[in-house]
Image (cartoon, rainbow, N blue to C red; front, side, top):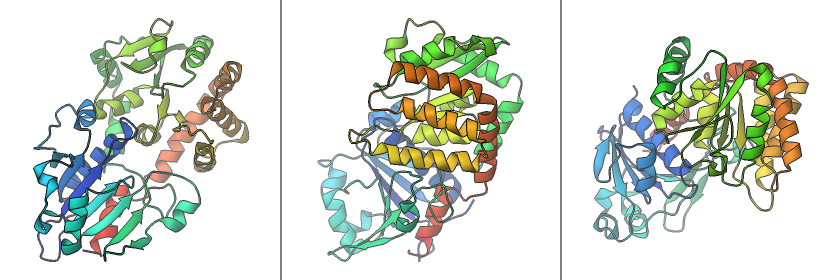
Length: 378
């Protein structure tokens, strides 16, 4: 474990600020980063979050004004005494604004005296422009400097969130012949030898009915069972082949992904965890009315297909299903046809997923890169 200290040699204090915009994803990313900083880099971390109830869904033991897994959790409430009038000494050495959120006004004023390292942690993207924007400084009129830190897939970006033991834990789970059976049993699922499992985590406007129909039509390759956490795609509750499971914690979500042959994910946190699962995935980007999400989607598909070493037919099948799944108005016939093509390419995609994870574990993870980025500025 590396340890980050300030100039006085004491453990550095970090404050992470998170406003929950994308329901679960923002809280999930902020928590994973905060926990890894505390566990693996020996820093004192406070996570300020405006919707702690969202975090508690992902991390049931997380409580406001308590420390859990090395992270002090605080309710970001502008009227709270802890933020209404904050002294400069209470400002951390490193301040992370998750996803470019505006910092509390009183905290920002106190930063002028304390002058911490201020980092704007941006959303993940595979677009080319990320490389040239990562690490740039933005001087402010009050004398402070905001630094931009971009997660990414290529060298020269901030990398991806990945705990140091994640791949080891994944491989141990997958090599244990009883691990999947025991985990699924805990969720109320009895696995049979012929079963093939897929998981679905999607936005409300997804073509989930077409997905369920396509999986049912693919029974020649095995008995597909689609696992849906409570609250996801409620329209599928009475559909054949659908298995409702409890809404799982963040740590159990990894096990769910590892238990499935195919994962449908959304947003950022579940997307990254599905990438590290080493299983084929279909990603639903947050749809924007002007179609701006398409550039982000296309950039990632080009990157993943290249780094996974996909043949042209498999790359085309993956692109087709993502185009259908992420369309502003999904066409049922096109969705079903694209999923059928995906199933034909599933063995090739499984090999590609394994190659992708092997290649990218050589890149330093986001938390480690962030600590290195900040250390020279303390």
